[in-house]
Image (cartoon, rainbow, N blue to C red; front, side, top):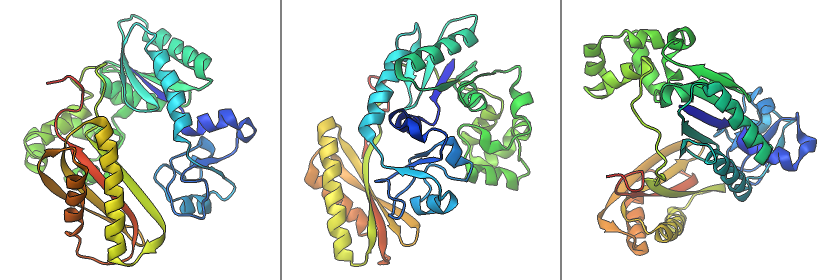
Length: 343
């Protein structure tokens, strides 16, 4: 299996339009004004050296890297570039599973995966002028992790043979599927490395994390994954919208109006997809940066905008704090599976 990941994708697309910025730290986010509220969508490698990363507040990014060039998000340009890349990948004799704008898995039958990887890089660059890194593995987990060792614009193979040589002494959250919270819980019971997790007692893991999750964590540490590469189009499990306010909302009536407005936008998105909604979740980020969510289930699956709005308002009423609000979001959750046609 191959994992193809475009290098600093959004920043790279911007640099194609602004080659004069090449070599400089680039930060893309919001409307490009770092004095406003908003978050970083991506940062060039030069900006990352200063601790700028996706999800960081733009104002914080400006403090960490004041010499950076800030650019607005141009979703349409990134979608066009992504479409060209994915069309290029589908030109291979391979099963292609698209993961997002900038990455995909390829299932290929070959005796020389490095040669295929280099050909992928060549064709992608020829079609788009963008660089990508390619990870090679016996399964999705290995291929996904291998890509990180190939960046930028490289190829890396991670298989059963070198799994522990490469990852054994690394912290558990290096594994795809283990986040900081789980890593902390593992550390509490003395498990801090991939090798340590691979050798952990299954009974202990099951007792701490549950009979399904515990063994699965050790499964990851052993470099195992049974998930196949699938070309079946992915169907999102939800649709959401968020609004960050440059001035805090201090009146709750205003918060209610804004949640209703955002809910109507989400309902319009849902209507275009003709997917039924089963639950609505409201996200409130209080000033300075404290986030809470509450949800409300619908009495029946629906695409009706008024019912989606009503559920959003019901979820909002579960918030008891009336502190100033800096961000509001509404998420409509769909029923059914994540891949079209899978039963």
